[in-house]
Amino acid sequence: MSERRPRLGIDIGGSGIKGAPVDPDTGAFLAERVRYATPAHSTPRAVAEVVGEIAGHFPEAAGGPVGITFPGVVQNGVVRTAANVDRSWVDTDAATLFSRLLERPVRMLNDADAAALAEAHHGAARTTSGVVLLTTLGTGIGTALVVDGRLIPNTEFGHLEIDGHDAETRASSGARNRDGLSYRAWATERLQRYYRMMEDLLWPDLIVVGGGVSRKASEFLPYLELRTPIVPAQLRNTAGIIGAVLAVG
Ligand code: BGC
Image (cartoon, rainbow, N blue to C red; front, side, top):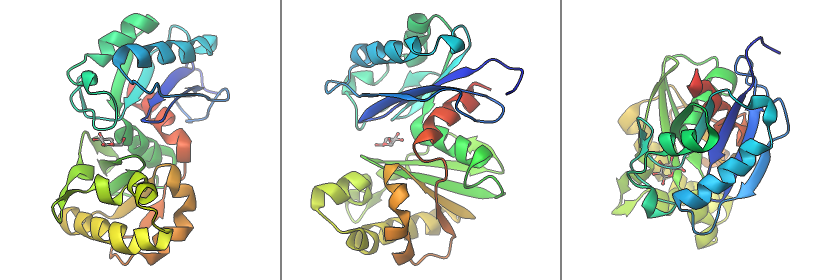
């Protein structure tokens, strides 16, 4: 383990809120992560209660800075969009809210951005230079761009309008479940169009596919015909927590 104190990473998602202490140098979890369901009415107050509970599980990380992800745009600690959580988050100064609650410095960032930092440092993109596009396929679609190891924050390409639709309402894993599509149909009818558009617009060197469904990548990635290499994320459901801690610095 490194000399530096463990840091707490917390990943706020549309369905679950997860946290664990992480060694900032290696990205290794120092205790088993805890997970709570996201409150049905996911207001700042309700989510803060869960975040406080999670922090209470890990006294070893007390006092140290905390990294927290959020499933929306976050600028300078302030939430700017909330597509899949309660709308009252918009314009909430989440960094100040959580910092007061936890009595320590807090760094907030978008969930896909955190996952991309983690994959770029310790996962599927660690040996790739150039432009890496990470997408998370979950309730929505999160995207992140890393260029030569540097994150360009708050890209929202999950909301690109394709064929008159907000892309995530057709191509997310949530949309696959909602519409009862097989992995093959989802890949050929929805993902192919989405990823082709992304590669035509961004020309990335590598596409990394994250989100819970990435553990089933062998069921849908082989159907995609793209010029860009496309690989599953490696850190799976730990990427958000690890990336949150990396963002703390
Ligand atoms: C949000 C993104 C977020 C993604 C995954 C989208 O609806 O706009 O900010 O990264 O969902 O949670």
